[in-house]
Length: 558
Image (cartoon, rainbow, N blue to C red; front, top):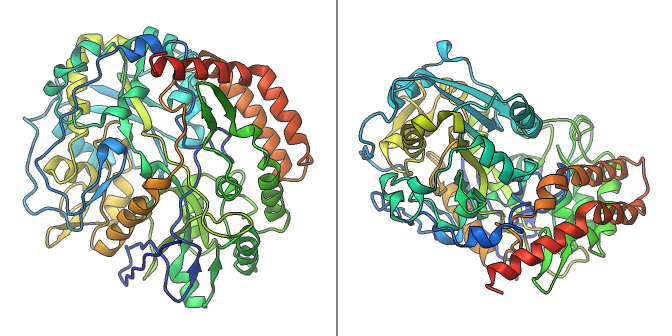
């Protein structure tokens, strides 16, 4: 039986999750898929492509000792070790200062990091950036790269030997990752393994599972950006817009969902700013990247309902239910279409929900999320659990002489929710980037424009649900994760490494993603998918499967 959560809000910067009892939005709470396809499919936010041939060495590595931060008690209890986030309804009064002064050494520090938000002003015209440098005790240069361009820019930067002191990246996007790290990244093992992590208390606060993404060839080369359930992808609806127009979203089956998208499309509005192929795949109960175990793995690409999901997606494009620029727009543009009412639904990660506050929201702006139904109806489909790690951050081998200082900088940036350091990293300077309403920081327009430096992708502690001046939204986000996490489908190979995936996965995956795009845009028939999957398997997919199976055997001690 599906459950519902109802919340309300009247303030402009708030968002709300849930379903109204009068069935304005029908079909559940809802999250989306993260699996193994391209940018239009299931791999956009995944950490797939880790584990395998070197797992034996990696399994023997002593992980950093987990020392949970106990300085702030959350209103809503989570389980960080299981990737289930807690929540806070109000920002704590008198947040404690937990850092022992600036961690920097006065020398310049270069960063390379991804972002899903518009680029901020440069340092000379940016009070937040200047304040960051002061608190770090070192001047910084920060290259902020849109996520959609990040893989190409990162690999070009590697090829040109131009990696700065600290660089963040998606492990699945880097060919021959263990070799790259051994050649280009500082070895952090002796500084972080076991009880050594206590010297970096905020990195020690990162849950153990997240560290799997940071270990290769038996060494720790990175720190993780932990996520879990909040990295699961969500289908949002502009609930306030739908209420104002008396519209319903019926997500009780595939056909009812498509009918709703038709009702939401017309004139200068489209139902969707991007095609939610992951949502459709979940309707057909296609696995989260892989299914099976060490005795036999099967790629989600091979699932018998893939062509059904693609046909449904192709129909939606053909009928004009998706914005005409959906295949080329970036995430900030898609969010802008949702904010200004050009699109009524949105496909994005649950962790991206708070980023809407960086946009000029209309009065009463509210969001809800929809759980995918089974395609033929009859209840909710299982959702796909997001990966434990969003991305990782390494220190350049060229900066090894400063590695302890740079690791201390990352530790500072990972200061936990509720501290004075987190308050600055997330909300900036009081009176400039935020104003206090009681104890709660309210972001100003200057804060929305200046603060987008990608700090949360450099280093971060466990995710905490918090929406300023909107405890109902925080409660709803928390309730969604609590409701969906117990039955969410995990990717069985998460945290494992495959050498073939690392070397060839992006190439063969891109070819399959290109085929998907051609199918969705009507240039190729859906029946070509089976041929494409066979090509993928012969080109390396079968080898990837075999290596993951080996890795699973080694993980189990076989």
